[in-house]
Image 1 (spheres, one colour):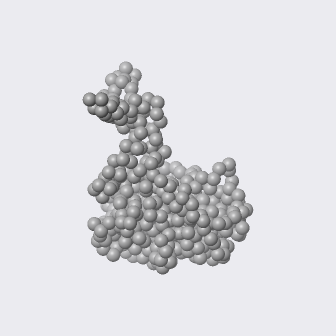
Image 2 (image 1 turned 60 degrees about the vertical axis):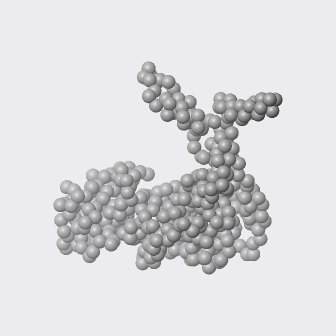
Image 3 (image 1 turned 90 degrees about the horizontal axis):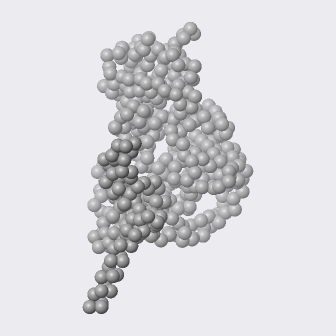
Length: 464
């Protein structure tokens, strides 16, 4: 009888403890989940009953339940070891203890979410950026950080198969080659190297992998920047791997990471050094020249190599890319790095830069007024933003859009990026029939029409 009473007491304590901590115990998964916790709901707002009270209470209760991270981790362990399933839908359990990010599945299965025309649009947009940078006296290099399962497919579960030889990356690479865009092929570099240079329980490469990526990128520049000789690495088990922390929030062990045995000479502007910072500016590196690099989280382990090999460097996570930064820092080199799974983003927001002026001579153009098109204007970074969509029925595999400005001096043509502004146009899908251009603000009111070139024909629509 005594044992039964003890069992009942222990059982009640286990059941009640998480509830008893609701009001005074800080949730232990907020940092891992990178979001604001739900607030306790109000019964009424300005005298009006809160009809969503019970739904909001459920959200608050779930967020503030004591020992939540341990309960989540226990559930995850049960599903993983008992059923071989992931309790976190964004994480895929691979072979040999490897984890993969679910958002890379389309790329892995070769489900191209970029149409062929959109791949052409993105590649041509990179060509326009190259032209702009070269005109400012700066080199330009574009590169793609491969998804982990693109390189290490042997560790993916067998239930996922590749459906074709076509993917966003293969489509884009073909178009980049067609326009001769300077492209650092990291996929080929990693595959040729043969080493395992990504972390099994993280979605990113190691510091050794970052060095291989760095060397592949700077090799595409016109001047020498690889200042590093033989590098040794020291392994420490202190890495906060992202994928395993999604599975076991607050309860995952640190992973091993190799760190380069290097003494850095560069200085970071500002008080703190934070790898995820939106802006990192460095000076006094050992190399020469100035670098502007647009990067994502794959730059976290790579930016120091670049900072050391340039006299001055600016690392930006701004998107869309703001090309005015080229002039601001007087860049001698511009690098754009984007992870493979985010390639589609490049087809949804055009870079912010003044549209190039073109000398166009035309004798005849088809009237486009009978086709459903749209054009909108706005303001961004002190420029006039003109964007819209063209009737896809008239568009071939590629197209060019020119905004026509007319004043007392005559007509002028400004080339737009062939990008459909998905968010600004409230589109649900990524379109491949858009245009987006940034003009000097003083041209507002001077737009007279839009000119489209496709399949060796010109189409024109007059606005006024």
